Image 1: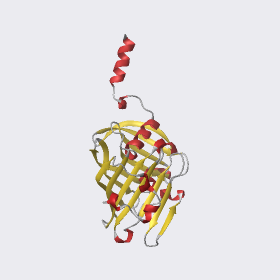
Image 2: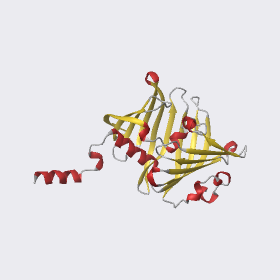
Image 3: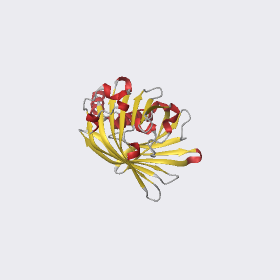
Image 4: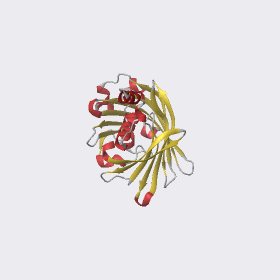
Length: 259
C-alpha cells in the first residue's frame, strides 16, 4: 500500500521536480531554445552597439524547420542595411557532425560555403556566432550541475559545460529555467577564468502556448560591445515547405514567406 501511495505521489509531481542529470537538463534546454514547434518564422532586429554607444542595425527574417532525429534547416534573409540587403544564409543542421552552411553574397553574385571551422566566427558582424544561431550539440560538452538558485525570480539549474574538443571558450556556465528549460543567462570563460562573453534572455513570452525568448543580448566582456536582438511576428507551425531550404532560394528569395 505504501509503495502504491509513493508511486502515486511521484506520478503527480511535475517533470522538473524529478531528479535530472546535468546532461538531461542541457538536452532539454537545447530543445526548448532551438526546437519549439514543427517550424518557426520571425522578423529579427539586431542592434550592434559599441562600448561608446555607436549603433548599427541588421534586420532579417528567419525561417526554421525541424526534421526527424534532431535535424533542422534554417533560411535567413537580410533586409537591411543596404550593404547586406539580399544576403541570405542556409543552414542544414546534423546532430553528431558538423552543420552545412551556405552564404549568398549579392555584391559578388556568388554562394560561399561556410567552413565548419568558421562556426565560432561572428554572425553578420554581431557578438553572436554562426554556432549560436543554430545551436551547439549538448553532446559536444561535458556537463556538471553546480547548484540550484533563483535568477530573475525564477528557479534555475546552474550548469558548467566544458567542451570535449577545442572551442573558443574553456567552459560555460548556464542558468536554466527549471520550468521552461530556457537558458536565462550564459557566461563564457577563457583560460585563467577570464570572462569572454555573456548571454542573457531579456524577455520571455508564450507564443502559441510555447515559451519563447523574444529579446536577447550577447555582450563581449572584453570590448564592451554588445548585440541586442528582438524577435517580432513570431509564428510556429506555419507549414513551411522543404523546398524553401534549398540552395536555389539563396539566389531567388521566397518573398511570400519573407514578408
